[in-house]
Length: 250
Image 1 (cartoon, rainbow, N blue to C red):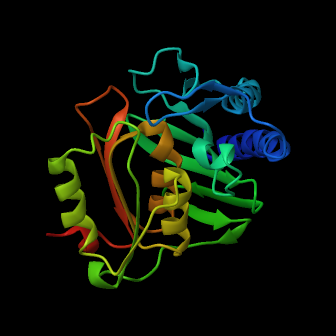
Image 2 (image 1 turned 180 degrees about the vertical axis):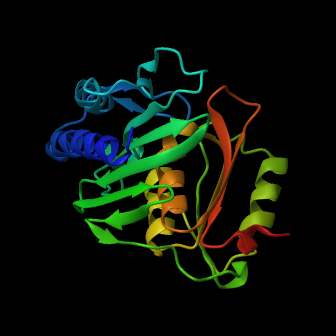
């Protein structure tokens, strides 16, 4: 594995899935389920099928949002993490904040990421330790290192309880920041941190496939990322990212 070949493969998969989703966004959306605060569309499955077909050229196993684990993922070998359509609710309502997200992870650490905003035709790519790019041009996190001057991108994951304790903890966190933005897509939120449009990202109990590519991009762009397992679900994570670690210091 040299990283570049894998990045090219993930880029090809993301572009193909994005082209399909861009066309599908203009048509009526087939809803497969809408339970609680979650929604699943046929477009999610169709995009995932496109991605998995491309990734078959790779030797690595896959964790995919729609179809789960493909092969063993508990060893030291890298594996793909696929979110075929992040921001499904936005997509279903015609809100152009949604994307394709693909990462390669090793021992729980994302090592490269591709996020494709197919509405804006913006392709975010990065390899940790090598660099990050937006449509082929080098990108980097902002230089802001103070929460009181920073823009925080965040959200409420599907599993958020909306109880008093959870909401109070959320308020205590967000009021430290200059501005707060909720885009409805964790992947694009992290891509915005990676390119300097936002300065920090936080979300608890978010699924790994929602954030893996974005975490890789933030690290590749020179930023800070802390990802910890969540007790709620096997693949749930608690994530703090920023342009500088100091933003998350108490």
